[in-house]
Image 1: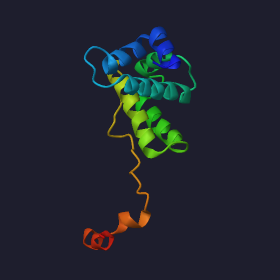
Image 2 (image 1 turned 180 degrees about the vertical axis):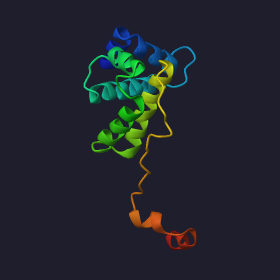
Image 3 (image 1 turned 90 degrees about the vertical axis):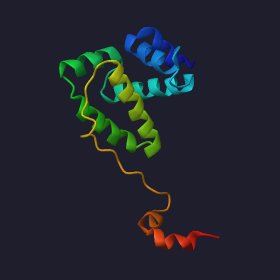
Image 4 (image 1 turned 135 degrees about the horizontal axis):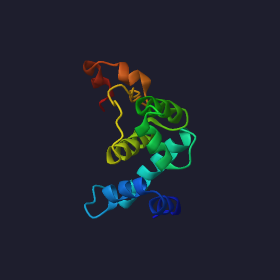
Amino acid sequence: MRRYAREWVERYPSIARLYKAIAGPRRVGSERAAENYIKAVRKFVAYLGYRDPETVLQKLKGGEIDATKSVDGFIDAMLEKYAHITVRNFVFGVKKWFELNDVKADWNKIQQQPRQSCNPGFSQQRPEDWHAFKP
C-alpha cells in the first residue's frame, strides 16, 4: 500500500472503514482500488479546504457542509484538471465513503457531465451512417 493511503488508514477511522470495505476480507475490490478511493476522498477533503476527513464528516452530518452541493462543485473543479473517467472514479470513491459513514447526498441532483467522444463528429452521426466507418 502506498504511504499516503497507509497513513490515512491508520489515522482516520472513516478511511479505515473504506479500505476494509474495498480491500478487506470480503474484498469488493483490489488494494489498488481501495487506494484510488482513498485518493478520491483526499482530493474531496482538500477541495473543501480541510486536511482531516473526520472533520469533514462531522460538518457534512451536521449540515454545515451541503453534501450534494459540495460533490457537485467538486466534480466541476476536478473536470478542469482531469479527464471525465478519472473524475467519475473520484465520485465513486466519495460516494462509497459517504455510504459507509452515513452521509446523505441527493445523487439524482448531482449533474454528471455526459461522456464526450474523442471524435465529436462521430457522436452526431446516426446509426445508419455508421456503415461509412466499416472497412
